[in-house]
Length: 321
Image (tube, rainbow, N blue to C red; front, side):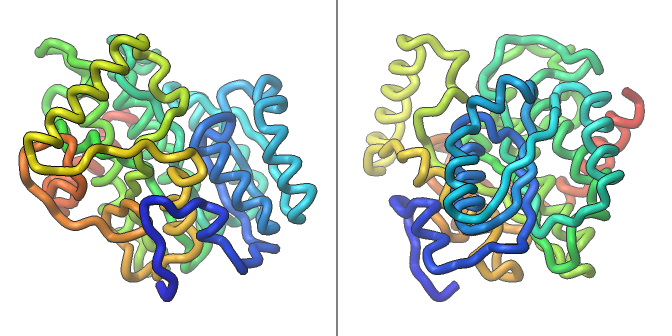
């Protein structure tokens, strides 16, 4: 980690002077937002990217800019269908990748949903837990043999993990009132814990895993908020940070929001970031202040015992579905 990057660094700047020809990446959710920008940055440097999308024909048009970058940079993009909220779809996608047999230098678990209306998936799981955590858990554990020795796994978490720890007893809100932001926070804590345990299990192969807080940016992740709700959220965040003596939150450009994912997958010292939570192209400090809108990571999101418990529960949940 010889270069110093920060909150305003773009994904393109992270990859300055780097040639990724011959490198292969899997990125979930490349049809928009941070996933699209991550894919574009990598293929522009010669990388081969397999990107998952829910609707392949529709995503062909949405990813045109990635193909343009690939044509200029020597990389390529291939799309594969995946609905993370359906274990049948996850298993089918994983089996297609396994049948192809081509290894990945890094896997970036990027796709996600935020603050969705309450619903259970076809497998019976709360939608945000299913999409953000369980779908990725099922996919990565199934295709783990394709992750090359000394490879990397990057799991996108969020500042929202600070709002709620995981609930291993009632993960699907069957015995409590549903709160969409609490559910989102729990799923993002699960993402961080998944990276902790994935790192522990596979580091003997040189594989390291980390979770990433990309930073707040305007993408369609917030599509379940009305303009009024989104404005209200910004005001709540601003007030909470002011009361805590913190500076106002600055929205990132999408290219800046993709930077930490790219940094973790390619540039950072993998042994330094293994099992850690990253933000602004750096290892985030532990900060257990109750403010949900502070920077840093709550210690419960890095708890090794909780990470092992979540892994065991996740195996149990998807095995029963």
